[in-house]
Image 1 (cartoon, rainbow, N blue to C red):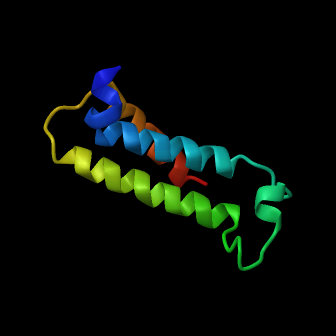
Image 2 (cartoon, rainbow, N blue to C red):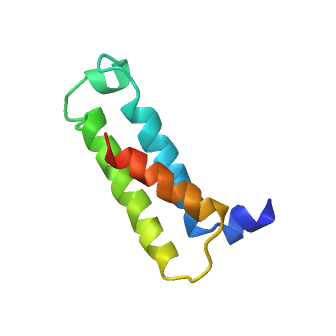
Length: 87
């Protein structure tokens, strides 16, 4: 648990968190109250927010690609980033 949280938080874990947030937002309905209001307080719709989460996940994946070691978390990040790209 200590190797994937707290001070030792790894890029692949952070990327997976971004992917989970992005995937959960993209699966919400269009009439969700969180994204139904388009005013100055809430300028994003769900597609914009999902796109931002995809960019963050891909940035974390790019940082992981610089390391030669590939583990289960990197593979999970690769697959979830791929799924997030399809939305």
